[in-house]
Length: 637
Image 1: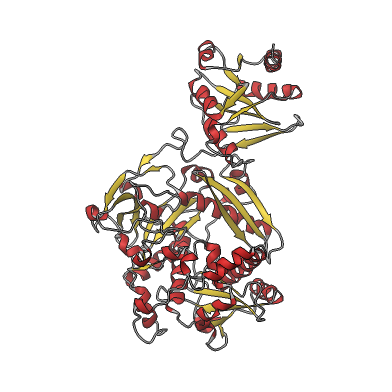
Image 2: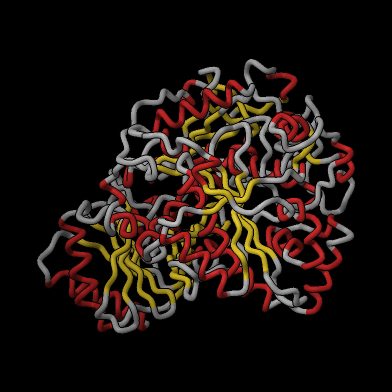
């Protein structure tokens, strides 16, 4: 008898001694063994060596409830219960567990093995007996035992977006995109978030972070930042995404990071909806679809560049489309799938015309709240890029002396050797937008010389505080990154001054514009008079707010008056909605300037507001000519 068979026999004996329901333990099971287990209340699959794919197939074919007990090196893993009427899924559990390991190839096909420790028998038998008595005692739960064998952890498994069993997909339809906003009361104009008991206290953490089996696989506090800073890591489709949170407290930073992780995960790919519309814009027409040429296209001069990875847009080009809701026309409209979800891979059957990022993504306790914060981001990025590409002078702003957090950040930045300056970037879209710039005071060539960021909010004080926090924290992170640059990195960054096509990543954008030689590119911001009291620039604001939906619809109506349509794509993950009541949305406003990273993918073609709005605002002497714009790589982080 092998050592593994000895453990299996000992487990059977221990289970029989508990006088529990009939349990069958299959040692090194195969599909042929399943035919002999029909009378068992619970089937325990105890493989000697195993792959996640093979074990999943066994559990799916079991005639009744089953639970897998397997060993991976020093860790013993039990569960979840799988079977008729059970929400547990071994495929999702193993996919969640293995995604943390960053293994080569398909981790579901890797072979694992080992034997649980004999000292774990009493604990394992107790857990298995409890599950046999009531398979619903802990639905969708995985238990892990460490080497000590006397410490057990329970983890709730989040469904994998690609799992057909746990994440059933409904066809994406125009009817399913309908969005009728309803009132969403809020307490103050500065906190445009509705109360949600499901995410208060530690409920958000407990729902999302379950030992690597949940939606978020890690939550980290980042030390030495000017304010509490946290990061949350999530995975969808094999892609790791990070949510970052900053706040006046550690709890606020963690909460914000978790919200952003949920937002990013929802924005990567469809959840709960199967894309079925494949056509060209020429086939669909303006009554059915948004014209991709209004979304901002890349400059044709870069289409042949080796770094250019898109398909140049043509009206007859066929791609995938999903439905959103035009808040302006109050009807469903189709948008390119890769614009609605930025984590999808391009293919011959679904080419990408634009380089899309997380522009306009938001998460909140209602679809109205998610759309509101997504729209704030659209307006913020549009204002920043409009000022940058058109090189428009902006009024400097003096933040309110009563805002202790903003002044704390100003002082921290000053002690680091930088002046933290604020500029009113508000444009014709009426939402207060603040551009922030941390500018180095001395002229030494080493280190970062500039770091940019922005903030947007109906309350200018909140916009100022957000811009200050983003700049101060971002400067801290960028300075650490700059210290780690090699001489080869530094040489490549300097080449970007004369060859902008070398700018490929978000870090490249920041590093290039932090060079002292890049200062002439933003000198237009520094030539104006000193700062003005914020109340002079935004008189009468903030207006009293009792309902965030009123803010959303009011902003949409203002955009409509400027000839801009607002489209909301519901990106909500059904599992997240059921557990936490959170909704996610992508807001698309054709005609506004979208943020991209990588010079050859900059989206500046086909956007008339880039040429006309600076003149309309009195920031340019005449309507601009596209050929005269320098279009330097932007510095936004």
